[in-house]
Structure formats: structure tokens, C-alpha cells
Image (cartoon, rainbow over all chains, first blue to last red; front, top):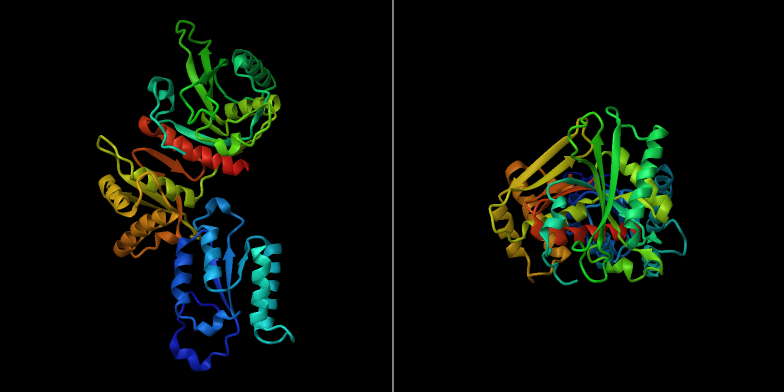
Length: 131
Length: 293
């Protein structure tokens, strides 16, 4: 399910399936996309931040068009205790690899990987990022 | 670094004023000797003549005799650690007009470093650091001169692009500059992505309003933080949105223009105020160094 911002329209609440993972997409070329994400975060229930949220930064292949500072995004990830993934959608290989990563994270969040919970996965991700 | 001082002898640096300079970053030059500038001029001149023979310099028209001068500009530097700038000029004397013995300047290139300590303090023996290269004139000459420098001093040139993030730093810094005479408008040009036909939005702000806004945002004079630049830009964006319902923050900032200087994301700048030369060149030196490293 794709949405341009949160909150989701309440009219469809009863038809919506359970939400296992929220991926916030930030385009490094658009300051507006960062502001949009920051505003939308306020509408997310706190329980999601136990491993069911991640930030996906796109457009990193074109640093010359960069409008957002990467350390601002990394700080966002730290504040909300959620991993930050970087990718470049224009490169097919990276696009496919990123999709596979997101799928894997989704499987864990939906409980399909025995022995790994969303929360334990997020703490694993965080440690590898710090080093 | 300490705030840049005004240049002592503005005559020597007047050549920088009001021209559109294309920017490059240059890696340190190996075995460049300031005492040999005349020799270098001679060698470069011979190289250009040879390239012309090969038919590589394509300037259709009168067969031009190109004269090369290479000079050192002691005034153009930031600190004592900086190497003084090196200016390369190509002039032509048209054979057709034998009466007029005036040389016409056809191309200029200036290597400089203004507070480039980040690069020069780590460099090895035998290397000269002049990371910023400004050119004005035909691209074919830039290419020839660049090739000669590359093969003679084992250095590498790269076009310097300026990101929207850096452009917003520049406009905030320059719009806040104190100017003694009437200044021109502060202009920001945005390019809107992903449309079938390209759309450019030009946003012009009265220079006094821009300076007033910056003065309310900046907390410590002489110091600028990313937060202050963000607040300044956000004010401009929300003002525009209030009137036109367009989010400029979703568009790409491609050019900024103030009375101090103008800069385009393709790495083209114009220096418009001699008092702020060193300040502008300092930012550009920093960009060049980060592209090299």
C-alpha cells in the first residue's frame, strides 16, 4: 500500500489489513519529502517504533542534486530508533537488492522468520550501523 | 578560519569581476616551480601550436596566433599557508588586422587556493596545492590547457558541480552581506523535475528584505550553522507557498544570485563585488577540496 502522507484516510480503516511495516521514503533531492515524512511520523502509533518502521533514502546516486543533509536523516533514524537504508532507484541492481532487503525486513516484522522478532532485528541493525 | 581580509591591491584581481567562470577542482601539482612560469608559458604555447597543427583546436575563422602568459598573483590567497594564485592567459593577435597590434584576450584560467589548509597541510613534499581552477573562454582552449597541465604536473581536473544544499548556504551567506550601495535583488531559480516540458521558477526577493530575514535568523555574527540556513530557506519556501501554493522545497535549486555573487549548479559562478572576492573563493575552495578528497 502506498500513501503520499499520513494519516491514512479513516474511511477505509475497517477494510485495511494489519500493518506490519511502515517504510518512510525520503528523496535526497527534495527537502519537501523530508518535511512530509517528519510531519507524518507524528501520526504513527508508538508501538510501531519497536522495529516496524524504517527509513528509505532514495536518490543517493546523484549527490550533486542533494538538497538534504545525510546526517539529518541519520539523526532521524536514531531519534525514532529505526534503521535507515540508502538506495538509488535509477540503478536496477540497487533497486532489486533494496526491494529484497525490504521484503526480508517485512517477513521478520510479519513474524514469518522463526526466532527473529522485529525488535531483535532492529537492535541487530543498529549495532552494525554504529560501526 | 579567520574572516577573509579585503584584497590589498584590487587592481591585480579586477580580472575576476563580472565574468562567468567555469569551475574545476584540481589535484595537487607535482614539481610545479614558481620560478619557471616563463618557461611554462613557452611550453604551453608550443603545445597549443602543435595541437592546432593536428587540427584538434577547432576555432573556425581567422588563423590566430596565440600568445600565452603565466603569472603569479600574490594577493589572491587566504592565509600564509595558501599558495599564491597562478593566472594563465591566452591572447590572440589577428594576422588579418596587421595595423592593430593590440592583443585580444581569448581565454583565462586561474588556479587558486583560499584557506585551503585542509588539503595543503596533508600534502607530500614536491606538491603545490591550488585546488580551485576558474576558466573563462572557449571550451576548446580549456581542454588544451587542461591536457598540458595534466601531462606536465600529473594532476587531475574535474568539473565542480554545486549541489542545492551548497547553493542554499551560498545564498544565505551572501544575502546577509553588508553592502554599502544599492544591491540587486536576491534571486533563486528552481527547476521542477519530472514534467514533460521543463519548468523553471524564478523567485526574486528584495535585497533588504532578504538581509533583514537573515539578520533575524543568524545568532552569532561571523558564524553560520546548517540550522540557520535551513530556517532562512524554510521562511522563503513558506512565503512562496502561501502566495502560490507551490512547494519549492520539492523542486531543485539550480541557481542563486545576489549582489555579492551568483552561482549555478553546473559549477558556473560570477563574482560581482570585489570586497567579497576572498569570501566567495573560500567557499569555492572548500567545495573543490571536498570533491578531491
